[in-house]
Image (cartoon, rainbow, N blue to C red; front, side, top):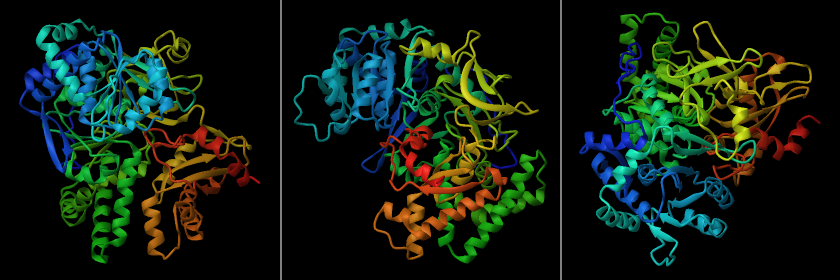
Length: 618
């Protein structure tokens, strides 16, 4: 268990843990060194089943052999259309092992997106998870002349399928066993032939400002960043991680799969995105990385559970979190924590805080990592008061993940930390834009040299599009996206993300978009937390028939107004939200208004609800 006043358990690891200058070289060295050890686990029919390094290596070799038998040449692309499952990792490592380029496609993408991504990447082989994803592939297959084969992970419901262009993963592995027996040296030769500067993976941006762009990452950049990560947030073979974010996103691909491979940390795959709260309690990860949306939901669950607890339990929590907050204040101020306060904190954990940590599933966590979107400083402090340091990292697809990160010895809520030691970060003096330079910066956008030149300047600096500042300690603070800063009709510059983060700290608000550019005052579009607001309605006898009717009730409108009033009290009058409306459609990752990491797309939301926005200014 981690101790809040002793952060020596999070020390950087600067030595090379696993040799190899490309991802497949590193992986196969791991198989040789760690053969019988468990690397991955996945729940199957209610039972957690383990994969050792050797079992993983055997499967990857067979899939790679199958791909070679299908004619996949070095440098050609194979894509993976699937949720986060072990087979995703097996396919990814197999593609890279036979010299191919691996590309991920979000499982929530529509058939038209699948067509665009396969066409743009010149995909030769497409891996799909199940019949649902296969349907999308079959819908657009005729428009993809380069696509030679579709490989299905899960054949349930497809046993009767007779299609020469579709095979199961088991059939591909059988082909691979036969091919490898006939060509015993080819896989090794392909692994050794791949060079660090060669293209390894494509990661497509979410396409919030147009068609998705394929960010190209080399083996050199990937190996460089995973070694660097161990200096930021050290982990090893004793650690347990939870794999649940999309593997086609840079965060889980690099920070989960490749970093786990490098360090030997065990990857535990959740059953599906809906079972994350249940699975995290089963897994009890020692290192936990998630997006702010997840941390906000965990906090909301605790607040709702507290309302249902006994007065004695509520009193114990209030006292316990008070003690934790006293320690957090001292830690954040760099002050020592006295022995009396330490003793009180141990009692606070025993009385209440350990139960809160177990409810969330972070009772074994040495530290938490948050990234991909801004998070409320108050939320960071709350987790710190529980006794678990939360380290915010910042980066983007184009920087291959984290470029800055909070250090465990100096946590500053509201900051994204200093530059990671493996790259340079600076503020453009003319525009305030944050710039990044290093080996981790991507090779450019596939098929889009003009966009590449716009993004990486002649001196190698990546223009991130984020505006920020650097304080006296060298810690960076993000103001907002360059294109998102609001200038009101009165000329006041306002950072919407600051208001939005405060709103999302409410257990009743999942997301919000603040509007007001060239307007007389600020307004907000709010997405409620369905579970918590439904619970509120049931507890207060508020009648509703569906999600839309729930958002229209007077009591829910007043509930959200109260949350907005709470946030407004912390800001100057000109920065306060004067009006709002609630989205009356229940959104999921399949909806165009949300990114795959479950953030509202500001531009699209403002376009789609333009009439309702205008009505707030009428």
